[in-house]
Length: 257
Ligand SMILES: Nc1ncnc2c1ncn2[C@@H]1O[C@H](COP(=O)(O)OP(=O)(O)OP(=O)(O)O)[C@@H](O)[C@H]1O
Ligand SMILES: [Mg+2]
Image (cartoon, rainbow, N blue to C red; front, side, top):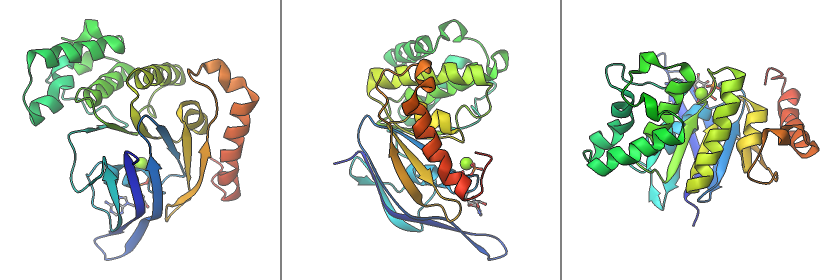
């Protein structure tokens, strides 16, 4: 069985003035263990809504989501989430921020501190363990956010435009780091992005969503070999995949993607 099963998923928001917004409609997707799934789609098409429902932060209006065979009805300890803003607690050191989910879930043991230090090492921040978030750059803070999401060793990692606020060079660097970490641990990831090149570069499959009400227009398999290198972005296969995905949005007029 797939790690994540999303079946006939729908979500309607009811606003204060009683008007309804259908954010998601009939979304169906299976995610296998170890898969890296990218999601692209125009602004407002329901990407964050989808991620929040899979993360148990928001109830579905229709359909069901299961993770490891269990229906998702609340946040799970084995699902980690990384947001666009790192949302670190400013009064806690880097290592204390990374350990926060464990502190909340079950208490921190000495070996957890070792694991957290290993994660910081993996993203090149071991020297900053005792620093405070304000002493770090945006890219470094985002790396701390990734460590915090990974510290529980989640079966599933949900990422909502984690690198959207970063400059192009930092973004490329973190893309490579993320891929390395995911390859080492066969991490299953659902990754939302506005960037078509990023979706192709990272993904085993790219979910292309339509504008509201958001539904899946196409699922594009990316056949580039792994490990991936930035040089692959100049290959024909990469260009063809990116152009194919771009075609969906040109047709619907969302040329900004
Ligand atoms: N709490 C809410 N109440 C009412 N409507 C909402 C709420 N949250 C989201 N929506 C609406 O649902 C739709 C989907 O929102 P969502 O945040 O999932 O989009 P998105 O694809 O993540 O957009 P972006 O790319 O800009 O982040 C939008 O039209 C939005 O206005
Ligand atoms: Mg969003």
